[in-house]
Length: 338
Image 1 (cartoon, rainbow, N blue to C red):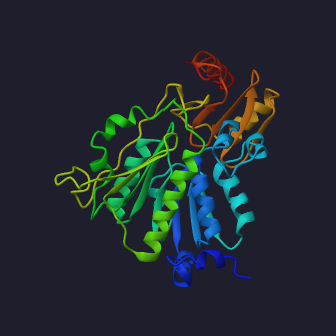
Image 2: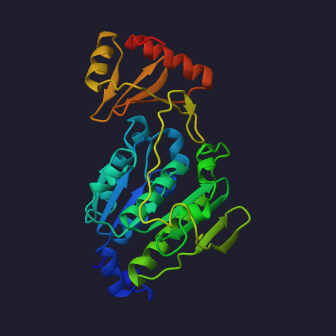
Image 3: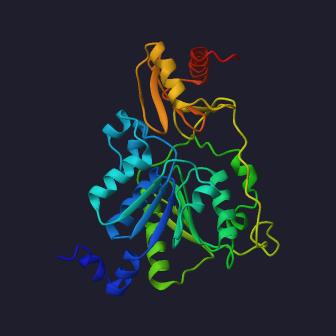
């Protein structure tokens, strides 16, 4: 039996369209809410190769809106890309899934020899700006998306021929300072935006032509759907150039709350080897779980993870004061002076 029979019967797809889908390679940046839905739809549709890029682990609060993950994933502190690959392989073992448990960077992208399209499923404007600039420098197209509250938006971006993200958001640097959105996100807006992403992906893969000047806006509460024409800015400081500099992420050595969650994060100036931290925890009789990417353990019944890229996440702290208290206890364990 042909598992894609129902999809091939769709006039706009057909056998030839399905063949193009099954030959395509797609990169997804961000395996959270939108990314998990989009990855599942692409795998079910029979995509050839899927690259997943995300540095985070599964948390219990993710399960309200992130379709691929389970309570076991959260309890075991699985990396999102690892958990996603496991579940996606159970859905369609014919799809080649490759994972990168790290943040997007030019070096990570260089490890991918070829892809047809990149899909932006991230939750911050620093990464979105990075994707936009990498698209210009490396000559690829991508699909932008975002969700907040009951609203979501999607746009296919070809920064050489049409408007780029900077044309859409000329004040993008200010938006980077306000990434953390504490208003939450409504569950139904996620699959709606994801489905639009996948529809744009199919249109691009099958027809090789797509409207690159159309922003699609959705409000799942008012059940409103609007489109807006976005024009390329003639003297855009980004897409008017053939090659642009990449944004540099400054090390945030202050504790900050991660977007819309009870997770607090901080980056250390100096990396601590995971093996060294494991030895310290053993001497302190602190139980832990670890793999090649991070160590997870509890301090005062608060769960924390230290990643090999020198990032510390503190989960489910009731407020900033409690997070700072846990952070200072962690430094005391390492005998790091303030």
